[in-house]
Length: 192
Image (cartoon, rainbow, N blue to C red; front, top):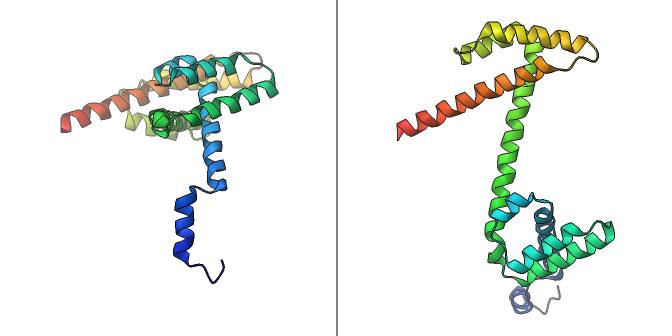
């Protein structure tokens, strides 16, 4: 910074000339990332989003292209088309994608918890895990779960045997957690 120019002069320059070239590039890359997400989205979910018709048509064009380079070029064109629209046009889309991402993270975390609980049930401390589970869920059929654990251990040690009981344990745990979540929402509704 030249000593002859004051800080206020630089602030005036920024306001006068608009965002810097670096900021423009960041914004363009953000729109390109959004365009990529829209192209990769499941068509049924994409149909629920409010998008301009020209953007929706261009997404369909990009999906039809199989060549990597041509697809990349067309994706860049889609992003350019999206930049022509006002930022507010895609605010609802960004919000919906953010909610979906958070919901997917929560579902993945819940699935990992269930998988680790299943591994504990099948491991050396299976009795302790079963007791904890029975304490949290008094409606649990212990005998049925124990027989599933025994079958899953046999399946694990037997080659070429499908892991039927292993999967059934996961489904049982999933149902228990879903029942617990329903109880929590019912309790929350009654508190109001």
